[in-house]
Image 1: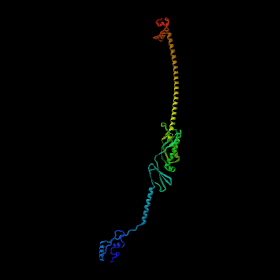
Image 2 (image 1 turned 180 degrees about the horizontal axis):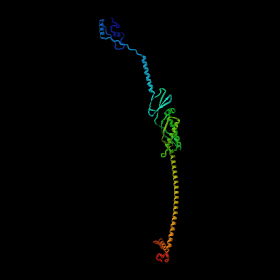
Image 3 (image 1 turned 60 degrees about the vertical axis):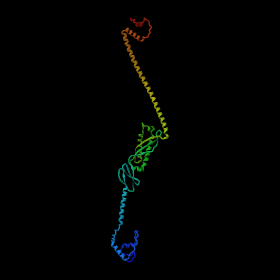
Image 4 (image 1 turned 45 degrees about the vertical axis):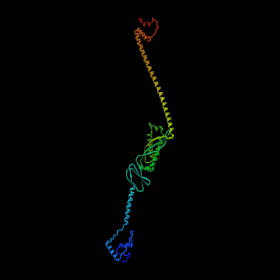
Length: 357
């Protein structure tokens, strides 16, 4: 056998390696010095005895490309369909509306909680709250009936009643709030323009409650006419204040007005006092006149009765009556230091001295 390295020596693997080399780039195979032909035959026979024959691999089935492509297309379509379905499902929660629009136009809205679905690609969903909401309004200066400028700070309780009308006529919730605020201040200007400033700030006789009710009613009328799909539950004034530049002048004017009102009350009180005093004096004079008249009548009647008694007594015993009257005169004329100068032979002196006939 030739010593050429390309000759087949009975070992197919060794022949292939020698013929093509090690393609995997592993370690280089060092050349071993060859022995003679006899030794090579012995070595090759020993190698063949040691190595088992390599089994032949069966051929694999060919891949069906069309089947794989069709399966992939089906899976892709199913996956895309699931994505489209889940993307077009929407959930309606408590205290909210879901407004469905198609090409910008509102087609329906859902208010009942639950799971709903819209038409893919051509419909969109907008969320609106259905619960009561509070809107803090910006402060505004308003003139009262008596030409006083005041700052109004108020808030509004409102809610959405017709989402379709709101989206169609207002566009969005912020626009509806802005229009509602315009309506409220318009109604407030009308009401405060017909109300005195004193009636607004007077705590005992405040008309705020009536103003709030009238403003709420007027605002709802304006909103209904514009068909914004909202309702104002209540409008409340939290604070009324004066502008800083007008505060001192208004206070001074209020003090002078209160002083004039107080002076008016004092004048009316004095006039009422004089009227009542005159009326009382007149009643006293009338009462005294009546009393004096009645007393004169009673006195005259008594004197007449006394005269009758005197006459009756005098007619019964004239001498005794004369003696009695004389003794009564002594009581009035004679005291402890009384000096009487009368003739001694006068009847008055004789009776006093005890000379009685």
